[in-house]
Length: 81
Image (tube, rainbow, N blue to C red; front, side):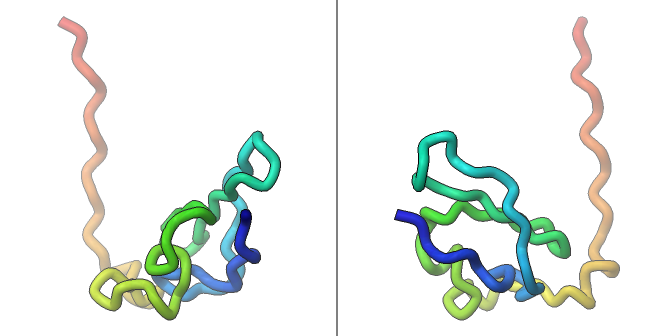
């Protein structure tokens, strides 16, 4: 059973998250992705992961702060020796 399409991202509350993927089995799950903070979640996850009002405060992101986040270094290619 699928829930209705979310109107905002649970983590940063940006509007209109994108559909990233849909289950090949009808009405099984949908994966959503926020275009602002890049958070992704499956429609079948618990409410504290999928609902902005229930998302843990400690893990929320303010979209205005994203540009100040540290840049992570790239993962080097695997060495085949």
